[in-house]
Figure 1 (cartoon, rainbow, N blue to C red):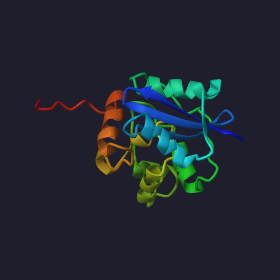
Figure 2 (cartoon, rainbow, N blue to C red):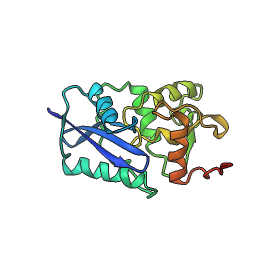
Figure 3 (tube, rainbow, N blue to C red):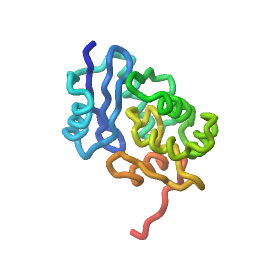
Figure 4 (tube, one colour):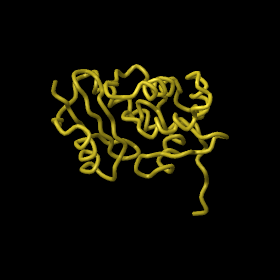
Length: 177
């Protein structure tokens, strides 16, 4: 089956998405510019052909754009290709997908929901390997005490905080300038 690829503008920069059939195979947060985002996805999906996505995938793109513009859009129903994703990670991602925009959970919360209360660090590692950022909202998963924790996307924790501010989960912190 052919893998498709598209890049698109959002309020936080150029994101990307790959698909097979009507199922999302992977997403990419902004990587600096369109060429870098495209290259990042092409490394993960070397057989991908860039082109217009089919309508169910375009609906996912539209949802991502709306969410990153501040709309309270749910992406939990977007079909994802979990082939090659370890079982523990898949289960952690399914729980993360239940977190609505404007809300957060901690790595420990997800570990408890998995029935594995001592696995918060493993949950953090799973979120760091999330092949579907935004659709699997790993940015809504925080460290204990509501601390940012890590974020593997370009811009790191700053990108995570920006996404949480857009969604209304964090207040925009004033600056001195």
